Length: 243
Image: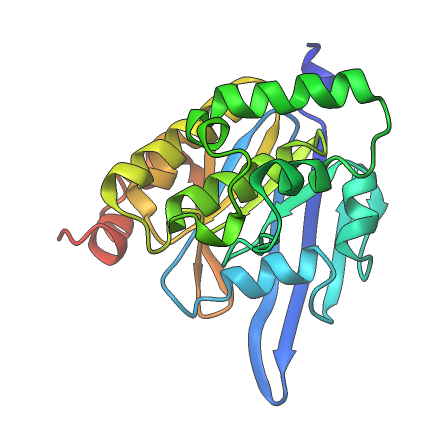
């Protein structure tokens, strides 16, 4: 890939604001995600991370500029964005509980109609998540939290996104399942999908990221190479229980 292509900014957020009634949850946030990057947005609960993600995907009214591939996407719904190559795995997963695993995955491919390639995508998801293959005819609502998270990620990947947004994928999961989720995020990134990862688990998020942004009280307080942030004394004290 050429340097120009590699450095192309796919997602750019400038001056983003989100308010709930009189409360300003996001206060003018700026960040960017370049092609091929895995970028982590970290911060404590209530920092404004999920509000930022919802604003990007049209789930909340907002101010500022949100650009994807150089064009404004502010106010567009998730279904519009999926067609353009931007897919989100929301906090809470949002799977279809009364559908089977296989049916949920196929719902992720609704923007495509090339059956052979969809079948190949299904097999790829089952390779990535062997547990889903074992249970493919099981109702999604009967899965464990970790299995539901795998399914939500698989469903998003079925749309063949250029950019994958992940909102708190490890929340509420067992340590062994957290390991699996981060392993898959790393694998997806290594296959060329651009990833924006929102996480409270700062050490795990930064350990697999290229760059990171730290969000506090609705603002970006720090940014830089992920490894640099991982060893920053302020970050370690605030998010890694050190100092």
